[in-house]
Length: 226
Image (cartoon, rainbow, N blue to C red):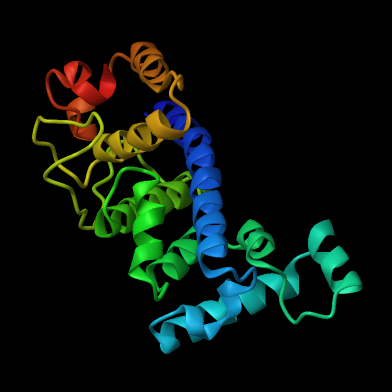
């Protein structure tokens, strides 16, 4: 069980990395383009809740203070601006902080455009990114994943523009997190091969109870996994 969980975490972490890059790029590029402001991430006028902005800015300050990235050092030594542009900040901020920043963007139109990059509405995109962030943290900190019951409430859309699942499942189990990961991958990396990787992993550990992971009977026939 330990070895299976380890390999499952490695699989999930590797796929989440691709999603993280795509989401960071979408948030930064779209908001920079729409606002015309490369420093929007530290501009209070771009956000609707000043208290949330203050908290995220404190997190930005903390990450900047400890960063030794070459591009941050180059910015400090070259420019007089108090903060680097958003695309630099996005590289040093944890994914959870970046999704909090996204959720606080004043313009609903900008948030919609970012979510639409992944064929989702704003509430569902935000909810699913929270699931991605939690899964990433569990994998990164070697926490048990395979049969864990997650406490987060997940939002879903009644009508999905892209292939999704139809069989009712427990949204607090690992299978649902894997479905969310697969959904994003099908957009950003269509030939991702995630289904084959899961099949190979399950075949290597036939004694693992996939029901405890939330896998329903016939899951492999779902549109998402075809």
